[in-house]
Amino acid sequence: MRAPLHSTLNMSKKKIIHSKDAPEAIGAYSQAALAGGMLYISGQIPLDPESMEMVDASFDAAAHRAFQNLAAIAAAAGCDLNDAVKVNISLTDLSNFGAVNEIMAEYFREPFPARAAVGVAALPRGAPIEIEAVLAADSSGN
Image 1: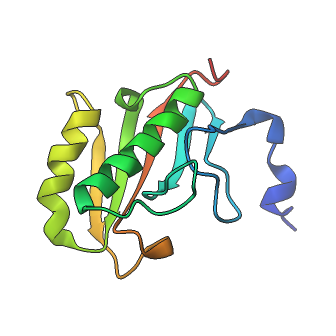
Image 2: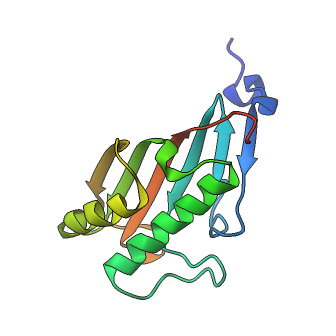
């Protein structure tokens, strides 16, 4: 009989990353986890990290806030967004696809990471966008 996965995972190989400059997790997850030289950043929505309220503005302002939250978590792990190898973007309105491309280019340099952008019916707290990323990182967190 196989042992449950949670009992076989060596927790010392995983480091949890937290930034006070990004919103606290609003569920049973961490802002990011570092393991095996990779940083896995949880989906970021346009929450203001101080008030924990949604950015109440245009789609562009919401997208900028989500990318800023992502960047803050990357920085807490000693990385920046240009270390990203994969980015996943969820949009509640795919007509914002062009705007996302323009805004993303402000946060990443070429060569750009691999990326998926998908339309979804809804996101937490009514957010119009959620962004998650996987970054190549120093596994020590430095």
